[in-house]
Length: 455
Image (cartoon, rainbow, N blue to C red):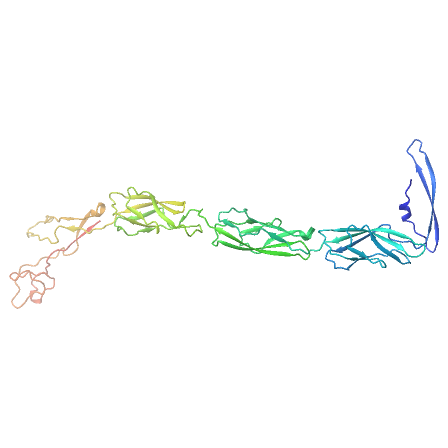
């Protein structure tokens, strides 16, 4: 049995001929040795009879899913010269399309939805109304083209609360969104309209994640807007506001800003007066946790105290350079359970606190005029309450050295010395300023001032 349909479909009536005879020779051979074969002839008489056309291969049409009722889908014309009537049979979904019986125009008769039914099939029957009557049928396939008509919708949107210690890369919110369209029209893309430089969003999955550390920010509320768009042309979108609350925690130790390694402190420093204030900062954003200070070691033999809130350090008792010359304190700053410590060495500096003192403020010494050089006239009894080098005294005469004493002369009647007289009987001049009548009296002083210096 040999199918000649393919051959017949290619037959074309030669121009200006009412009929034409095709002769085809067909040879059939086997695969034996030797090969055996046979030949047969086929004759085709092709003639023009105004038969139906275009029905051998069927029809394909496309229509948008947003087409209106009575919109034209396709026009089918089956005959060359004579009118035909058209109808549908074997519709995959009845009553969605109609065909005009006289014109063959196919129109939309119901709402179309690509996501529900993307393809419709039906058989078109054409009947030639002239004699001899002929009829033919062909498959009509109508593809419903998707149109972007639905906006993305998200569910389970909530405002999360996270800690400022949340690690970079952690997901803080997973969006669950969908689009009722299909294909590219239903593909969803996510974006953030504002992220503070701290947050990111996966454009494909809708996962909002931490992109930068949160422990350096000063605000506790992040107001975001998520834009959810589809892939249609033009795209449709919805926006959703999201608030992310940040809970600040104490997770970073305080940091000292001014604590030196050592400090010199005079042994004359007053007690009860702040001589140094330790300062630290709290890098955390928690305002409810106070920064406090304490001396955690070195207090056993030290006379120091620190104010817990201000960090001011005072002396509880005087320092004694000759007893202890240095102290080592451990200063601790605390915020919650986190602490920072630093060692402070305090060196006691010996200061010259006291002036030299003599047991008497005036020494009167009688010296014979025949006293020889280097004769010891008297011994001064002086001391200094300081210790060490501050108690070592050095004696010097700062005035009166080499000035002779007055001789005991009486002031002539009617004259008197401008200076102080030692007595009414023996006028002993105690001043260098002598009246003209007393010029024969030598310059005199009442005493030799002595200045004491320590080292």
